[in-house]
Amino acid sequence: MPRRTLRLLAVPLFVAAALVALGVAGMGARPTPPTTVFAASHVSVTISVSGQGTTRVLEARLEPDEPGLHLYGPDLPADGIDGAGRPTWIEPVSGGWTAVAGPPVAAPTPFATALPGFSAPFSVLPDGPVTIRLPIEHADGDASILRIAITYMACTTAGRCYPPVVGHELDVVVP
Image 1 (cartoon, helix red, strand yellow):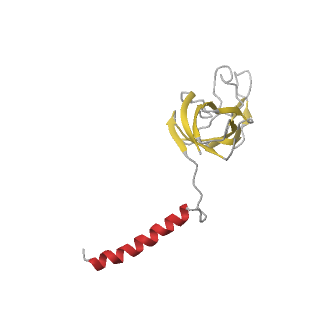
Image 2: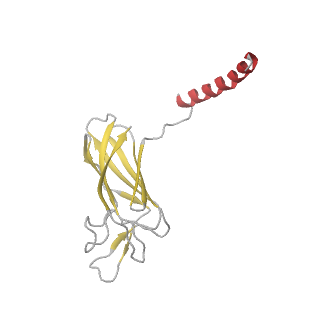
Image 3: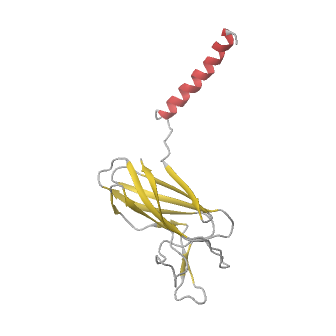
C-alpha cells in the first residue's frame, strides 16, 4: 500500500481513537456494571451489582425462553405451597458481605393466585421477564467478588413446570 494511502487512513483512525478515549475518560459515558449470566430450566439469568460505598443493590433479571412462562414471587415459602413452586430469590453467600439491607423487591409486582387442591395461594409474577433487587451491605466497600445463590422455578398457568433451580451458586464482580 502506498505511503500516502497509509497517511490518509491514519487520520480517521486517530480521530476514532481520540473519541473513544474521551468517552472512556468521562465525557458523558458511564461504565456498565459487571454482569454474570447463566441459563437453566428455560430461564436466562443476568446478575449485576450496582451502587457505591458499603450499600449496594444485587439485581437478578430472569427471562423465560418461551412465552407463557411465569416465575414465583420472592415471598413464596422456600419449599413452595404443599411442595409445589419455588420462590424467585437471590442471596449473598460469601465475599465480605455482612448483611442483607432490606427485603427483595420484585418488578413487576407479584400477585396471589389460589389453585384448587393447595392449602394457600401462590405468589406469582406475571409471565415474562422479571427483576429481583436486593439491597446488601459490604464490610468495607471495596470491590470484590461476591458469591450468591439464586433460586427460581418457571411454570405455565396450565401447570407445566420445569425443574426448579435451587441455591445455584455463582460469583459476581462487585464494582
